[in-house]
Length: 240
Image (cartoon, rainbow, N blue to C red; front, side, top):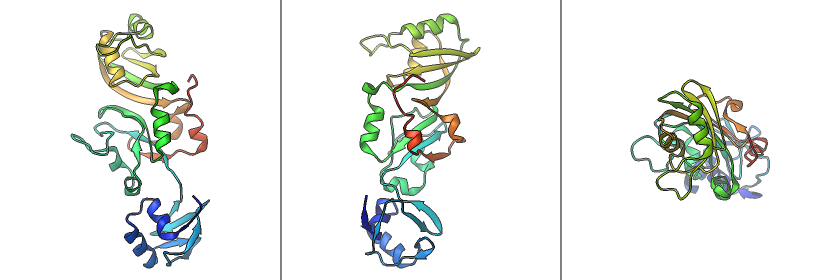
């Protein structure tokens, strides 16, 4: 981003159509450093720009990178079918600027969900070639045994996979709870692996991606935050 007209800046940030953005500006609803700017044609440098819209600060960002602590019973889809979509948990501006989930969590799975409007970032984070570990906390229907952990580490065969899938790491966290680290990101993978190993997943939450820990972000269920460069640097394919 560089210099843009004020109406284009508002539109790029998800405040609606160009016509609506012009109306906001002409109505005096847009300020910079406390000074009202009501000329939508005004050319403004976007680097480091902070707008006040409806008296609320908005940092102008070329792309947004978000983390949502996803609650249960929300679908990771822009067109949900059976449950509300996760975009309903975000400000409307993010829908306008085409923010999308990075990968998917099942509707009943909770925890860390990345979201962005940066296509290359979404593709890179979703690519299995990057081997980015994802950490899950699974609650099981039956007790966690040494045999179960060993089988998950050795690899279990799923009926639609050409080769067994193995956990990168698997640690017992309680009598009916285990932490499992995966790289592949297959459909329903944790649940299917537990079922193939003779147990059943009663609840599942994602707690980390790469070296970025959900607990470090301080988000309650349903809350979100921007991911800053120091957070994005942790989304790497190193061992967690």
